[in-house]
Image (cartoon, rainbow, N blue to C red; front, side, top):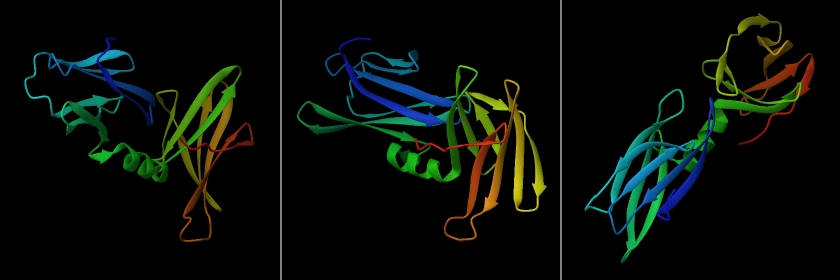
Length: 180
């Protein structure tokens, strides 16, 4: 990393939380993007100092764009967009379409993510094999983590505005959902 570091963002996706770092050399025209410490894009001697750089993040190749705008004189503003939305908009929308739980199983930290639209379950960046079934009060999605029996229960809240409530049970014990 050089002294040209202009922006750092943390982006929570289903396969994990990714760190995006952007270097912008305003005297050399250099632009470098790192995702999780790995260089994914490098441009040297860019004469146009404003513009945008698009790249992908995570296993699902989620589209990300860094916008470079001149504020005044030689001051620049850097904004990150994910799938065409500002990072703030993306994270607000993401909290509606996913549920996330953080837990420790047998000394291992686990980040479990449910994608509500597909009912896919991810744990620490790996998509988990699941089995879904309909039950009297909704659905249950069963899977196992390191020998532990896990289940995501989806039941109606009874209120249209609240929609469906998703609950994670590990060995029959409820785990509190976290907000990212």
